Amino acid sequence: MAGTASSAKRWLPLEANPDVMNQFLWRLGVVPGEAECSDVYGLDEELLAMVPQPVLAVLFLYPITPQSEEERLKQNDIKQGPSDGVYFMRQTVGNACGTVGLLHAVGNLTSEIKLDEGSFLEKFFKTTANMEPMEIARYLEKDTEMEVAHSEAVAAGETEANDNVNDHFICFVCVNGQLYELDGRRNAPLSHGPSSPNTVLQDAAKVIKGMIAKNPDSMNFSVIAISKKVGDY
Image 1 (tube, helix red, strand yellow):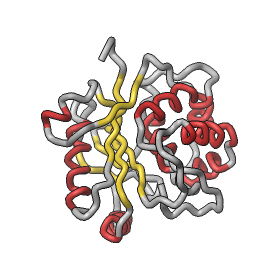
Image 2 (cartoon, rainbow, N blue to C red):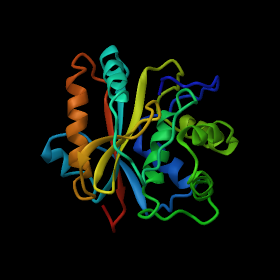
Image 3 (spheres, one colour):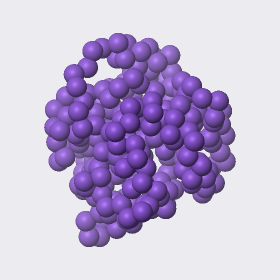
Image 4 (cartoon, rainbow, N blue to C red):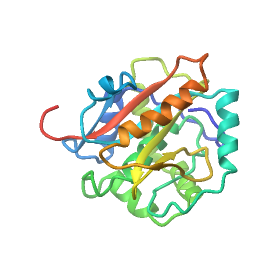
């Protein structure tokens, strides 16, 4: 939620709470019967099997530490192949990473998730479809409707919001057979190799396990899956 935001604007952080995120997404235009966020209680196969299927995207909240920053900067210097077809935006608003993570998820799932016609999200993705990542970030900065919706979602959380935080949301999605890590603090999408819509949760879990292992002194991690709603869970 903290980060290298380049604008003076700061929001209060969004809670890692599936109920809050669901209400937020539904208010912005995701059809309620289409997709739903849920907690991932652990990363072993037994607990992953309890997550509603099919999983479309995974959000990961982790603490920013010297180790995680060193890793991010190292990876930023690695030359990546093309990431055609990936919806990606930078983050310039402080503490907006929860909202940016949800935008990354839905922005790469517009063929899988129905959006209400004329809704905020439908208009947002149509308007920003051909923008550069930093252009999208600047567009979000000026969007008062999103800022109000974000503030209302923060107020609906169970814990008192505090803008002095050092945790950060990122998103994992499968696009064109590759698992991408989407982080508004990075310069570009980061590919973690082959994946598929059927294995995106397991593939993301492997990457997340590696990130957790590099920060053994921290316990403040949360994983949230966004699943396609198919009948009753």
